[in-house]
Image (cartoon, rainbow, N blue to C red):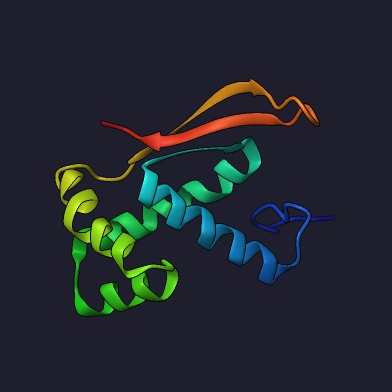
Length: 117
C-alpha cells in the first residue's frame, strides 16, 4: 500500500527525478512556458510556485536557496527582477496547466505549463 506516499516517481531514481525537476524549473523560468507531459507538469507546479514565493520575499537566505536550485545565475536573476515582482499582489496560483492532446510517439498526455497573467 502506498498510503501517505507523496509525489510521482516518473520512472526515475530520486537523484534523476531531482535533476529533471531542476532542469524543468530552470527552463520554465527562462522561457516562461514549457510543453511537457501531464505528470511532469503536475510535479513541477508546486516546485515552481514555491520558488516564486521565495523570490517574492527576496531575503538573502531565499536568494541563496534559489541559486542552489536554479542552474544559471541569469535565470535566477530574471526570477528576482522580472517574474517575482509581477506576482507581488497575488497569493499563490501563479501557473496554469493546460492539456494539449496526445504525444505522437507514445500517446502520452501533453500539457503546457505557463504563467497566469
